[in-house]
Length: 406
Image 1 (tube, rainbow, N blue to C red):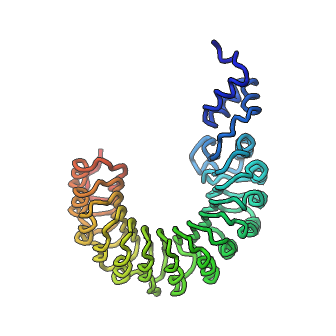
Image 2 (cartoon, rainbow, N blue to C red):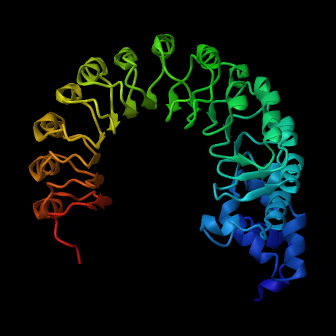
Image 3 (tube, rainbow, N blue to C red):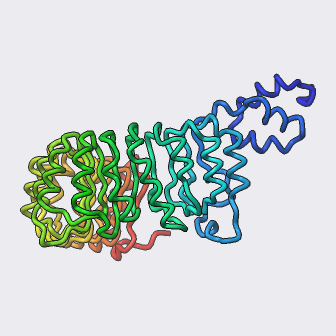
């Protein structure tokens, strides 16, 4: 029996079992199928979509061409499933989003709870989108997003006070104007990223923002948008639910980082290029963080000793980079716990192959990064082959004593 003799009701039932991308392709089979797919509410089950999945390549350079237009594809997708969507992502491919696309999102995607406009180039104004969805947004991302018209970016701040359900907000690398208006958001945030390479945010704006966000569990200032001071650290300590903190680029005239140890609920701490961090400061921090699961200390050149690692009894992930003061003995107590899943020891030239073999004998590692570790030898590779069943990522780039792999 041929499928072509089936009536429209039967076809609609069959099409419901297909993925959205397959349904779009089936529209080209014949007029009857296209009519069924467009008329019979086939896409009512689509709740989340990533527009980039429908584009022809994953190469971000491809999307920088001025001659390319994504309007037809994007608008076609949104017209089909927009009314049912709750989560929309444009895929972070640096696509140029025109006013036509923005208006289509506003017209069709009025049920959105999650809106990810990260890493795109916005050529227009997204106010119409926020006018429709600001009251219901739970997740909003403009991570590394750029604007053709900087004045259009400022218009989004009008909707901050309406985002009363917002739980996750990513404003990484956004402008000074936007960052300094974030204090208008009510105290519902659980995750906040305000990282920027420039000191764009005023101290008073950050204090006002953090003072409201007592439910915050994740805070990313990587790099920090302000120069941290005693008052700001005191505000961080007051965030009793904070479990994840990432901070970078704190100058060496700042001796307040040791107070981070007072955030007792913290499970993840990542510090990068924090010149204020010393051996004594690290001791003060780690001696209090008994629940810590993830620790990263990257390019912190003023840490001249790592005895403080003895306090870390629960780590599943450890990263230390660019510090010749780290030695084998600093690591043995962590390795002996047998809990590590991710280990990154990069460009720490006084860590030998013996320490890494000690880790491999007592832990099942999933990710092992030894980039630039000059004392590694082939014995590490033999130990991996004989002990590790769960390893999914390995880097030994820049390890001159390891033989060239075939």
